[in-house]
Image (cartoon, rainbow, N blue to C red; front, side, top):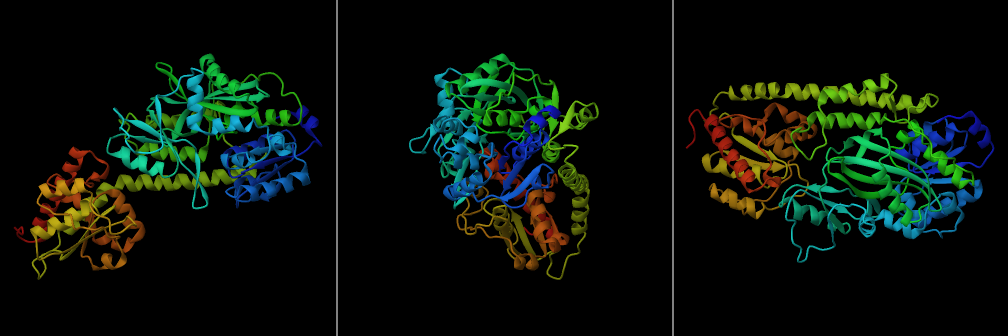
Length: 582
């Protein structure tokens, strides 16, 4: 928070360096330190919003952190020239680079970091889980998976497959890998294969509830400050970072669990211990975030200014006693929360794995801003270049959302009108209302090839092809779906996938799509084809726009989807000729 006395005390002191200025934590740290009169240099890869801030003294181009030594060479030269009092690695990428420095290095001390051993445990979800078990801190039931050899699948679902690290290097680039909720046995091997190709995986029981964070500031193993928040809106809806959160009174049980972990690591600096659960069935430790976090605006605006505390420790000052903080208090990342609103609007609110809210309530929550109970990330009244840019982006995104909602509302009517227009086509001289038919689904390995071959079986004189939007061509239909198709009298063993292209689109008299995602892709890639397009499902005895993708369904659902394809093709064949063709 602002403090004139502190600004005087900080005047003329060393500057601070904030790395990864493109991150939310980086921008919030810049504004926090700038408000108390500290000169701040900020580095980033490419352009970033934080460079527009009035608090940014120098705008620095930061080397790619995938080359750790080049990054450190740049950082050491910069540090030697400026003698920064505080260095803030705002993302895990730059934090991992600092691990390459000796622990007594001046940059390491300025970054206020614990030992490498403690950081390695905090950065590994598996090592954190092992430490928590040793200390008898509640954690989800878990097992480490390094290979699928002789691996027994879980007894119950859903489960969470969690990469043991958050960042991996792929083709010379650092890639973020996130946990995945696996709902069914069919999804489990595919998801596991994908994640094991990157790193070992921690398989955990699914914990219902929302995320809670205990944020701490330590100096040489001693707790100085703490703060607690609860995630109210999480992206993705299955659980993740927060776009809207609330400051909560400290829960002594959670604080004791968090400090038990951090005390054992002789922590130094900041960390957030993340929990998941609910008051009625308890909380479990998920991980330790050993750096400043994306929801940093909430503790700062509530009264616990963690960047200021880091500055004090780095420059040998006393941060003072535990601050009192306002609770309840709310902060919102306006841009991210607009994405959350869109997801919440579209979501199936009956799905127990989605952290949804009643749609009207999520809109009424904005009233807290008018009541002075809520602030918005990075909206500093003095930093108008930042908040005006963010507000413009949010307004533009909001307008696109409104257009999207209107389009989705009107889509059933427009699809029905388009379909009726096609049904009114006269029979041509060939005896058909359309001669060349193109069936399209996403991957062209299940629904569209089944429709193609069944249509050829019903109407041998038709010219029929199929295609998809998947970029990998030549893929075979899965064996399990071949068996389903065989029961319906169709042999898909020789079918190979094809990517839809301009030549096919121009060739077709009619294009039939399997679902609305296919329609969105077609509208983007081939807008000229929309006039001769309709949905295959509208030819069902009880018409509907979409036929589900069987790829992620169980055997019963996949069989039902295949029968829908066959029934829709029968309806199509009946319409294509004045008399049904067989």
